[in-house]
Image (cartoon, rainbow over all chains, first blue to last red; front, side, top):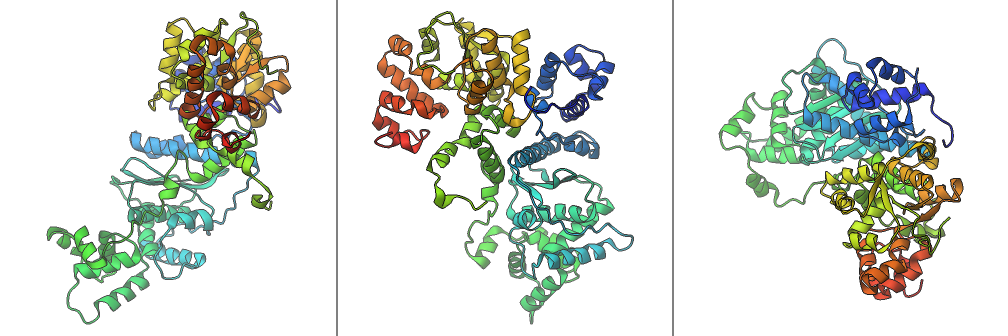
Length: 392
Length: 205
């Protein structure tokens, strides 16, 4: 064996997490290696060292490798079973998104550790949900966060950079099933982690990003998944929804813009809504709902517009002209893995810390994909000179 | 130990890693190339499993491997006692000192049968050099450039196979083999090959 070996207890704990991630029972796993359940329990508790042939069989059953289970730097998280407990019934789309977040975070933390990279956290203070008017608290907390971030009254154009660069949250934008908007999880080792759906339009991605930020503020230790079929809105969800609206469209700002745009006019028109929505970077529906909430429009206004032909994209073009594509997250969403993770992987390979096979396993890619990811890494190395040497 | 003329004994077994199989498949002449050498050719269960993982995304490497196995050209190799100890030493420890299962099993089985490990991965090769200095290790490009291949399929087909592995599978070429490779595939074709380092594509190496 190479270097310091993990203890039987550590190996057992990793095997337990891997089994739970793979959604297998102890009985299932015991059957894989031809032992009784109590023997598997003993292995997971570190009372009996797993044999190498057993480890190989378990690694295959758990869709991992023996090296990934024994490698000292490997990080094992319990996000998948934690999220699973949240769901009333099993949902493949949520399960897949959860697994993706778990895998991305696991890989990033392991590569950071191996390369000695320390990620700075700058989380805002926690604001637990208090008794009383939840909407008022959300409004206050959202304004406090805006002030803390120094955002001013302007629109939020790039929530992902705010989360990533200002707060130090691990945030990923990847294509997910359409029903999943976002996931939030907090782990002692990895910190706050958010996954957003790259398939959603920028306005919706902004809403999901701020929604998950609300969970970072209020219920940090609870994992959360935002889907489009939530039937029951808990107090925490109502807080997050109110926070999201208040953060993206602060009441004072909306009131001021509304007053300026409608001054001297008798009716709220599609043109007003298009301009107000554009100014705040939100959808037309989100803007009308916010106006309703702030009593600047009567309740039922959005439903009236919908019943009367809606507010179409053509009408938006008539008011605003042809706008450039607003897909600000394209760079983050493209590639086989997120760009920062790709940089870490290339560096770990260049330094001979990880092999192609280890990276394939860690990043859940096949060998062809890893080669695509690593392509040119050697060229970078051979072309490097003092001029482009980094000052650390 | 790495040898430029490593196929001197026809009884010595060759053990291919997943990365080597991917390169061989990309040549589109895998069967002819494997047939060209008289040595027994095998792949471990772990390495085969890695290829199988690629099938989910439409890569045909595992299917092609099965065809080669069915044709009796490649044998699946199980690890036993002595190989298992080497395998364990290569997967248990720190990231820098270990390999993934397929790479470790390839080395372990080659050690077990006193054969030649065919492996491209730079880190795997350097671990072999330090931990198992007596073990013969070769990479795909060395294998494909071997005279036996030229004799079997012809010089031009050999050059085409090399180019296909470079373009189709991004075959890794250790720097010590760049000059010979460039000459074999023709410097003009090498200049157009984006998977080669810039130095190998330039006029002189």
